[in-house]
Length: 183
Image 1 (tube, rainbow, N blue to C red):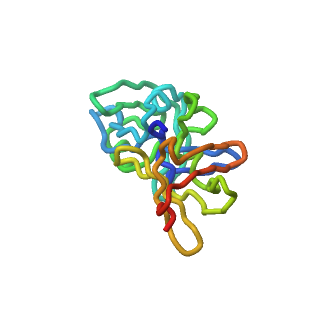
Image 2 (image 1 turned 90 degrees about the vertical axis):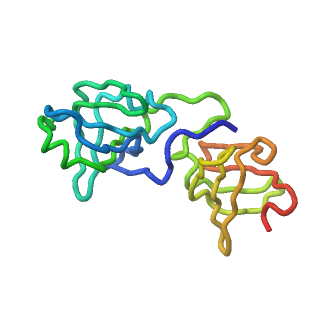
């Protein structure tokens, strides 16, 4: 299994549109309203190709047109419509930037967006229901899928030895656990 793309705990529904978090505004940049953004995606092209971004902070949520965008080391500098000066930009510090999930770039076979994995049912090859994927931990050699069961929680390594099938359409993951993995 390859690395997943977007932190799955950052999924949001705006009307009928599912939108996913692709970045976080960390501060203003300059005096004309540009914001410095920390990408929250392994697929930075999802952020860099956006024409509009949904800004979410506290009780504020609105779409803004992307006027300009440029890379600066591991950050992205963005000018957005309606944010014309440093003071306005500073008000959006720690705001999340989101895009419609349908605008995500397609992934190669065997790679999944975290937002697609969250909420999927996990079963064994023998048909035993294990639980629901609630989170994906991405700070290890391979991703760990956090699967919540009725009485416990399991960490399933996202490697082909255990993960036999991921059916995004039917929201189901089939695993073949080694002895002790589910104890």
